[in-house]
Structure formats: C-alpha cells, structure tokens
Image 1 (tube, rainbow, N blue to C red):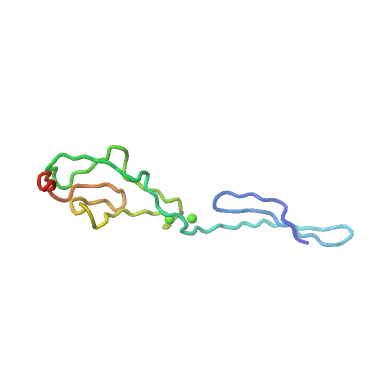
Image 2: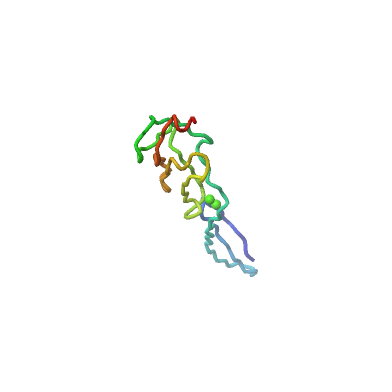
Length: 122
Ligand SMILES: [Ca+2]
Ligand SMILES: [Ca+2]
C-alpha cells in the first residue's frame, strides 16, 4: 500500500511524503520524501511597462546623448526563469529609428543621428 501523506510546495519545487505499509496484522511501514523540481517553460512573452513612452530632446542634440523619457525607463519584464526571462532590446528598422540607438541590455535610448527639426518637417 502506498499513499501520499503530506504536501507542500513553493514556486519551483513540490515536496511530499510517501508511505508504504504492509498488510500484516500488526502493520509495518516506511516513509520517504519525494521532491519534484518544476522546470521552467518559456510560456510568458516579455511585456513593456507602458505601451507608449514620450521623450523630448533639444534640436541638434549631440550623438550619443541619452534620450530620457518623461514617464519612466523603457523597460520590459519577463517572469520566466533563466534564459526564458532574459530580455534584449532592439529598434525596429522602420519609422525614425535610424536617428536613435538602444542598449540591448538596459533599454537606454541614445541619439545616433542628426536631429534637425526643419529637415524633419519638410
Ligand atoms: Ca519568456
Ligand atoms: Ca515559465
């Protein structure tokens, strides 16, 4: 006879005790503990803290200057473990992205081209 007698878990590991009993008139038994590690699956996509970030920089800001957003850092989180939760930032090759660069790890955006309002408005 085998039965589970106790159960406890945290987010990564489940643990329980298993008991084995014989069927004699005076029953004898033994107990063992089982731990089950739950391996992470990449089942969460990274999510940005906001759908839109607003920033302003003076015209002709030097290349390399950091673009600070008004609300908060451009930041995304991924709740998965290990590599499944490591996020890397990049700029889509569209719109005005050629004027800017982004740090792959920190998400920090910098000026990477000439920002000339008059040229942009033309
Ligand atoms: Ca993930
Ligand atoms: Ca996961």
